[in-house]
Amino acid sequence: MIELKHKTSGGVLYKFDGDSLAGQEISTVDLSCADFTGMDLSKVRIHSCNMTEALFCDADLSDSRFQNCILRRADFSNATMNRVNVSDNVMDMSIFIGAIGEKVLFRHSKLNGSNFERSNFPRADFSFSEIRQANFEGAKLEKSNLYGADISGSEFGQADLRETDMTDAKILRANFAFAKMTGSIGTNGKSWGSPTKATPKKPWWQVWGRSAAV
Image (cartoon, rainbow, N blue to C red; front, side, top):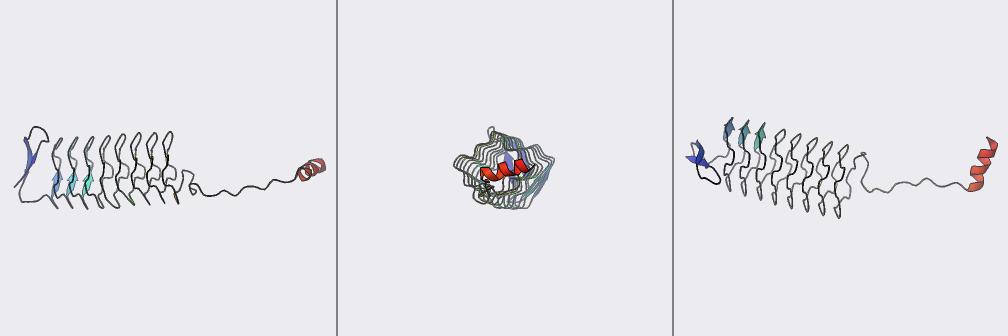
């Protein structure tokens, strides 16, 4: 039997039969401040749970699915998150420092104020998410999708954003200092930093000649 305990008091919040949570389904349970540190949570399905301030540090969340959950201030530091689906969840001020995972789905989630510092999330999907005032400093997000996301005021200093799609994203006051942007798509749907074709200036006598003819 597995006991999920409160991260500070140690009190038992929930009990599961078996020796692993991998592949389990958890629904409509209050697991705020639950401690999942280092657990195997691969392929777990979690629905409509309150997981505010829960700890997922060093846990393996590969192929798991969170649906309609509250994960404010949850800590995913150094977690393995390959192909995790956390779309449509409330995750404001969560922590992903050092977390890794390919093709993670964050679509339509609220991630305002979250910390992704030094995380490694290639090919992640943040489309239409709210990620205002977040910290992506040093994060690796190559080939990720930020289409329509609100990343206003977020920090992307020294982040790897190569081949990232930011079409229609809101980037007001976002900082991209020293970020790698090669091949990225900007908010206007065009390549970020691609050379623009300058319109050749006509000699002054041609401009004046046309004006005189008119």
